[in-house]
Length: 139
Image (tube, rainbow, N blue to C red; front, side):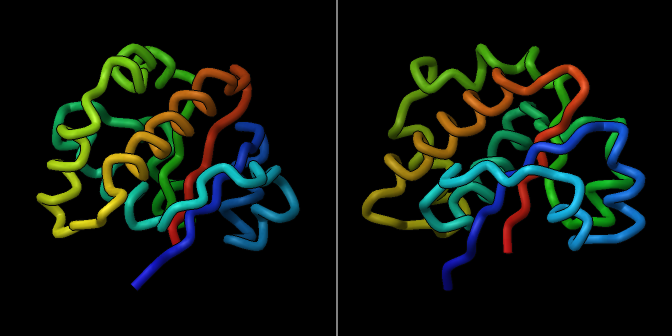
């Protein structure tokens, strides 16, 4: 079963409106990052969960209510401190593949999909303006 990952950038000042309106608010108040991640959203989801297990929490504590309302990961500019750990060059594709295997994600291209996920997260967080958040929704 495949899923889709959608990635948005929203101003922090618009989060209360997005939360009040719900998912439709993403279309009104956020900008979708086109072609951000083209593999199954499950890979991105399990990579983020695996990072959490490694002590690398992408979720910004200030936005827990938004995460809950949107059922999405909300990553603030404070997470830029994690960029060295998210650098694809600093990560071993085989290790990423083993993380996914722990979640029963035995894909032939698992390492490539995981590295693409890591690259996307690194690039998007690196470019994130100080007044915005990255919203990653897996459907």
